[in-house]
Image 1 (tube, rainbow, N blue to C red):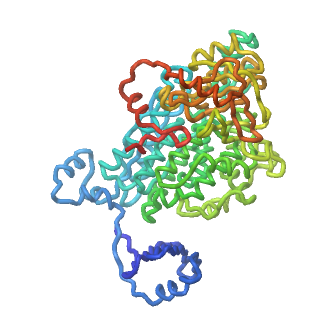
Image 2 (image 1 turned 90 degrees about the vertical axis):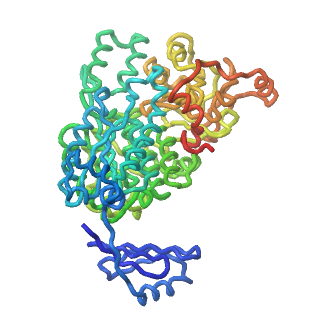
Image 3 (image 1 turned 45 degrees about the horizontal axis):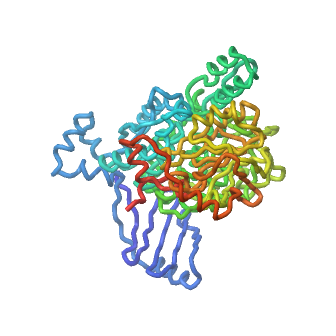
Length: 628
């Protein structure tokens, strides 16, 4: 199908005509920028400097418009319509395409489904449903391919966790590779677990082709002994049993019943946090982040994907049109209101870099300072994403934030409409719900994510402070060289009032920056959540809570002060001043640095060796494509 767009022949003005709306963009040789919407060709809204406005409008009125054609298959036609590539076309005939199919736009449907993880176990089925809906659309042909996943829930607390964050880069690289090599015109990633989503989004940013991300949805809550359960309940049960708070029978019962089926971990943990951020950013359809994995909602959503991807293709809406600075700020604002995972920091930094948007850890602090923490969601709260879905879902929360002028409603989304337009028909949060507090009565007047600096974090650190932990902690260090020894030490030698230090777990030191959910789970399970702090150059699961500080940069492996700390050193974490410091003089630090050597680790091979040699710091998003 050929779509016609009037185009001005002089200057750099392109006027694209669509059924409902005409979108116009203009960049002159000067720094002038014009953005205009002509609805039904009757109304003009213009933003530009006053000096240029009249000249531009006169030019638009008087210029002669010619017509050019634009085809939806502008990438795939490279191989399907070139007579000099008969072997390529023969390969496509072999997979079942016919001559008419070769004229269609090809939509790459990438599934991160695999059997070994409940977050992803149902995604291949969703991919098949999405392909059916894509193929129904005139001029579209869906082609399924696959990429990897790593289960954070399974690998947490093991050596396997070192592969979790590197898997984000493998996912991004593999999607970019397939879509580029196969010349797909559009992309629909279908994702579930934590690193699937940012990995897919990084790829979409690099590719900058029409795309919509589909989230596999949250898991239902488990149930045991009249108690609601989720994955973090299982982690914390270990500490509860070690402290003698639960029996072996209940311990086993919790493990068996925590996760009743398919779907990502149920609280405002990393998967649900990233899915919510992407929806708020505009790169997925409304409700995708709060629709449960089971119960029919995802099947209904998959039926929308064919028409939805055709919209972004016809309008040539690309990720960089959507993932603007304002859109990313919207996403951060939502995460602050929801109490989302600290992992959002490194993932949004990496996504922003993929679309060349300037973003730093300090921007998270600025947004945290002006955004109230509203959501009583686990891990530190009471409710799960399933409960929020029943109360109205993420769109209802976004509508509340928009009403309070905390979101920018003018950002474009994959629906072809703005955030504000998407939310016009959305119902408010359910009456009587207690999950989302009103803005005038927040859980905390500002965000839970705090960016700290000090002699322990000269390049920054990320704290997760909901208000329940207090805002000041000072105490002697209890140092562990790895997560395993820390998990054992928490139940044996750690004392109330101490600051647990887990080092050599950074992006380069581990390598792979593993999550510290097992140690934080042990702390909470042992009843020490309000009596100890935990700091690390590693990171935390979205399920972690307590007085915790991660992403300490520079990390121990790179000579950061965290690598020089000794048992008994006084460490002070002051959230009111956004500081984290060790009570050491400059001379003491320099004397220790003279004797310091990186912790010996076994020789690396393969992906972990590549990762150590290419990864940036946590404060720069742990990206792997910014080396010379």
